[in-house]
Image 1 (spheres, rainbow, N blue to C red):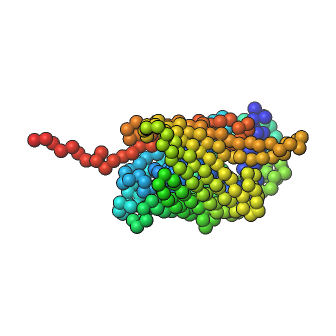
Image 2 (tube, rainbow, N blue to C red; image 1 turned 90 degrees about the vertical axis):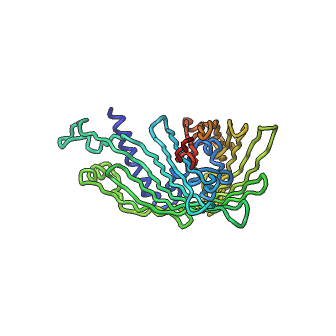
Image 3 (cartoon, rainbow, N blue to C red; image 1 turned 180 degrees about the vertical axis):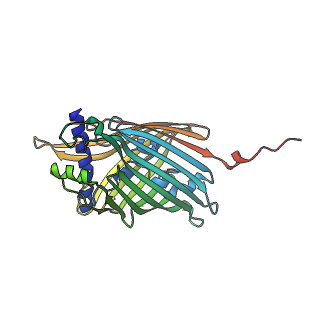
Length: 370
């Protein structure tokens, strides 16, 4: 029990220290928004910026929203990470607005760890351990995204869109932050080729952190040698994703689609395949085999990195993703097996998602036959 309490206390400390460090160096801010949504995209290693064609475009590329073809769409997803410790959920809905060329979507994302023991008050005033003083709290990140996409009435195959997002993050009653950001995207289809550009946090996203520690908690932090955190500003710098893919017809109703994406970051050298300062580039690739828009099998590779081991040898690592999907009338059921690191670091996670297409005529009452 004491060991478990110590681990939970360290977890709380790491959250605070991490937030302070991020305020000084804007790398890896709001990283929960880089995980991805929908089992299709995650099965293809997040290589979807050019080919996404449904409600999940509110996340991947808002330019894709008009491809819903004037239909309402709903998408839901659930997954768990780190052996079920962290829960990741997503929900979105899209609908036609204004005219036949425009579609809008609202998306919600939550990544959180619940029931974290708070052991800062484990000892009573006399220094005795009292487990009744242990409480629990939640550390969670939320994103609310409103997106609009429009197809060009003059240039066939061209679409563009944008997203306004509000980010709320909190660590129990100890700290919380609000942030605001903008995304923009473009897609262009040319024959069997698809091209996409997604610009995340185009104006940078600012999260203002507010810490509310009571006197008892501050005393514990000081006694354990921790620095009392101060209100700070966390900045997420812009990120650009370029994508290109092509469809191949194999035999009758069998075909495949493959897409390459390149993530450009501008916050200094990162641990990715192409390292630079200030620009680093991370490539990732996805493949989807399909039969008659009915059954889908997906593969992907991402997090391709090289490093020098203890023997001085260069070692290559990568993260494999796989997935499968099936369409039943207006319902798409998808599954992906994915990871948050390379193939040897963390446990793989199961991702399940559902998408439903809702046609206008579903709301119309059937006329009585006289």
